[in-house]
Image (cartoon, rainbow, N blue to C red; front, side, top):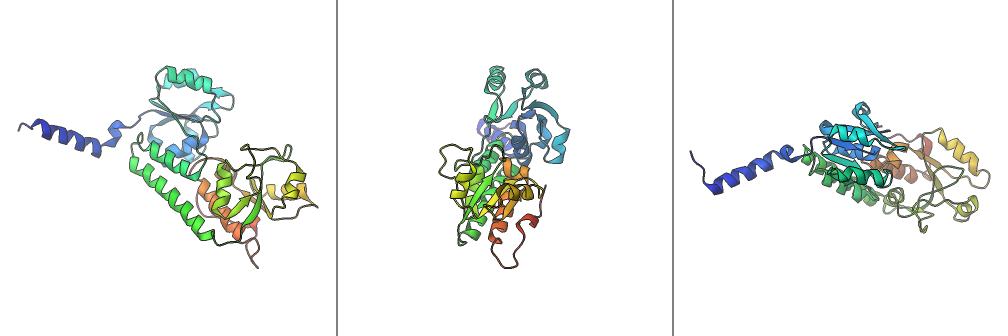
Amino acid sequence: MILSTSRRAGLLLLLILLAPSAWSAHRVISLAPHTTELAYAAGMGTVLVAASAWSDYPPQAKKLEQVASWQGINLERILALKPDLILAWRGGNPQRQLDQLAAFGIPILYIDPLTVEDIAKSLDSLAAYSPHPEQAHQAAREIRQRAADLKKRYAANPPIRVFMQFGNQPLFTAGKRTLQSQILNLCNARNIFDDSPVPWPQVSREQVLIRKPQAIVTAGDDGRIPLVKAFWQPQLTVPVIALNEDWFNRSGPRIMLAAEQLCRTLAARDRPGGENPAAVKISGVH
């Protein structure tokens, strides 16, 4: 049977729609832990051939060859692996080396989320390269829905002034233009340094005390809580909430786990018989 030109074109279009894997990337390298997590969430685990140091989630990411670290990018090894897509991070990867890779004709997708919506958009963008594009879009929809649910659930709660503490010497925090500050907003909490002109300002004890935070949020395990409390005593005695460092610091899907834990803990802060912020547990991946 001989098909007409229009029918052949229609059949070709149908095959493209039904087989998106034929048009996806086949050898992908991720140069940051959060881009690795996003790639897996987008259904690209089978096409990842290498990743950066500290790409440890999901567990199978630990088996990937490491071709980047805080010291830089292994250009020779990346070229030898012949990737058809590189996932990069402007905030952590050296631009000069990325430019060198681009000069070889390798497509580079930059993923630098600063908001929850940016994370969702990143997943939608990865769908174009994924052998499972609908998985990427579904992950994006889930993040948007979880964020909307949190904002609605805690909108009526009294606003809480929060200091986000990252390190002691020097003492620095997150400003308004950070993903971490936006997570606070989902809980109807207020970052006491949301007026900072820079994303990660260094601050003094006096500046924090003047702004009278009602809670302190830090990244780390429960062992971090007594250290933070000791740092502020006797001038400041407020609840200290420690969030899983990988959840809270990485711009990936697990940021929503940090958000859910934070909102629930802040809401229980002044409730009689409420949960101990240091003891709050949340189901889900670690």
